[in-house]
Image 1: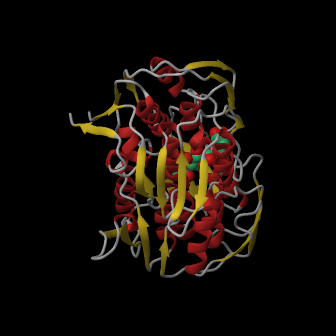
Image 2: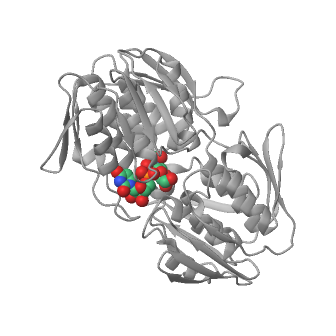
Length: 429
Ligand code: UD1
């Protein structure tokens, strides 16, 4: 298994190209199941999760071709992917594929809406707490699907097609909002989704669905109206920039000091995280290219942060912020309100010398002057990148094991950081 080796202490200077958002790419690829015409996605990131979803969709019969960057284009324009679900040959998403990536469960919405049936494995356990799918199933039930659970599989059927309905979520869920949005696009009549997730990735998927012919209003607010249509057609859509990758590199620069432009990123996608960084003493400016992040040698201030659904501080940046605050002057508090048990990185950060105390869902971080390199273990996607951020500032060598977690969500991480002066490389095997 590959490892990432870092020698800490280098400042970061230069430009980092920001890739297309993983969390938009996955549902956009899944949306291809809604039409028998071709969906073209541009700016698709090169990630293990994207490759895995290609396998999963391929299993349903989706033809997928991928082309790299065109001559003269910069690296960060990503790949162009053509997906054609002309013939769906199989409506089962099997256990061995769905357990590898939770988001693959989301095929259930488009499959039942278009094919009137789906058999999708329950996703099973996950390193960041129990992540049930009850909201997805309640939404599909509201739209008229029959739902049975049998031998670990959800069987969804709607012999006469789905019909529009009121879908009210008791708690904000990104995935369940995607499910309801995609399913309702092909349902008869009007659907109103209440307490919908407002994440930029929801807006991006709604934009793409609209290009495919769906009638959607209110995406990006808590109430989304969808007027169902009988069929959806071809479209071409460019994936929005990854706000989590942006925030992660912004925190890396905040950690090491330096001056880096995050090319292609947009401030409006992560305002709350940028506010927290500014409060800690980081300079951030919007430029024509993207975002410029600067920190001189001065110490970082401590912060108080709670994760929250968009537009709040994203849970996907919580681990990275904790790494950063481990070297702030003063005591920070970070409360995780979205996922229980999303503190797997704490013990590993402590191995690097961080002083962190956990009490329920709140972590108290007492800033220390220096971290010291050590071997550490990646436990999930966001946790693993927090260890990289800590390693960039730690004295001596840090080796992050199990980096396959990183490859799920970060494209060429070590290359991007090395190009800005970090001493970081990948050790194969
Ligand atoms: C998505 C993101 C993930 C991010 C998360 C929260 C993708 C591919 N993943 O995950 O990176 O961390 O949003 O911003 O976009 N819940 C239920 N029942 C359900 C569904 C969710 O109780 O049926 C709960 C979850 O356990 C969690 C909360 O709702 O406590 C929010 O989860 P959700 O927004 O659904 O996360 P995902 O869509 O899985």
